[in-house]
Image (cartoon, rainbow over all chains, first blue to last red; front, side, top):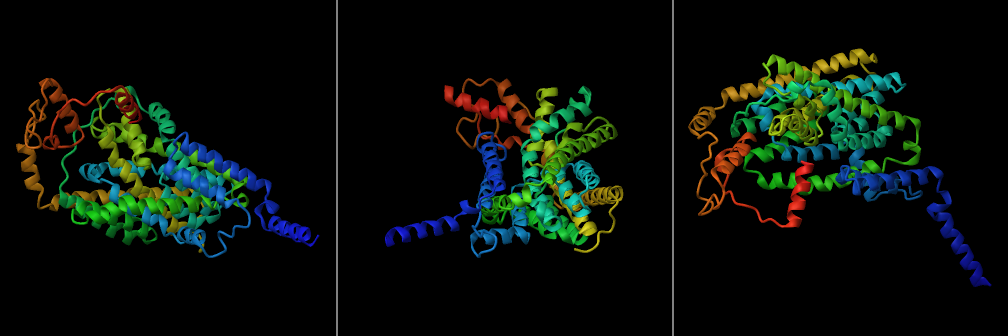
Length: 376
Length: 117
């Protein structure tokens, strides 16, 4: 009898301590959301390297009583790395080591396309404010239009940490949908003649220029916008590893091992912010809608400015490369190439589109820095 | 969190877009300045002038004893050289041109990768 009693009490204690006893409908829905994201990552291959860990983090975040964010341990350390803006600059270090600024250095005018495409950020910001978000939340939502995950996370942490999960998911989801979102906008805004413009081959870029650029731009931008000095500084440091020619081991580590490790932490930690209480709110749907608006207007801004540059340059610039100004490296540049090839087979725009594409990364960081200076 | 400078979305948009354009335009000037003071520029330009135009000629026979494999017509070599040059790479970077091994599986994978690109 005593044995049965002890067994029963123990079972009850195990049940009371288990997550099942306090499992809510919201947790169930969020685990389902995590499974859907996992499906999109693995089966549909939508940014699988990012969406995969985000989805799994979302599932983990909805197990009750884990104490992930309150008890010392790995999960709390990951959360610390996100909450204190450690991971986004480290990702930028890797991105810098992977980025070739050559096309931008060969044709600096394409920097303006990267600037024009930031219009999507501010259209979404306006939309968010009209829909009732406060100015900090609207700024964090708007940056989705920059199509730059680490910058979106960096800004969201500082201006609207409670919206981080929704903003990160919207940013990465739309980045993977760039090949579907951009072509209709590009075709709608350009004529056949504009799409068929063949661009001249770019001039060669010397090693001197490649080494000087990251150093000079880090100094100028960091002095002008200190809030993004960590982001831009790491981007340019990574690029210096790559271009100096004497730091190959560091470059290799930054663009492979380090970037992969930090991606795991950043994406899993972002997913872990998607708890039912913070994600299952009406604002999440609005954020996802505003993200789409931001992408569409960003693409349109780049293409329209590309049309202006096309006329000013005497039909030497194909407006299709303007859409690459929304960052999303290198996906957006690849979309310019595909749409250009459809209009005129044999017209290679990829390298030309890489200029505005990397300019978009800098432009988004500058937009984030300006918003931090103005709105935080 | 301190007080925002303004909460008018139109003003925020105007100021931010102006700053983004100015900063990136300034970066453009910096790039032009770096190009202007580049001490290696004249050497690079001289190399560019003396470099042969993308022509059907096979390139640099150092990498392999036969850079262009037998049976590849000069027209094909010209097309490959022009395509590589259109991406901004020099012809000296072409080490050899040879037909790839063709099997059903490899062709299927190649088609899939090309479609993705």
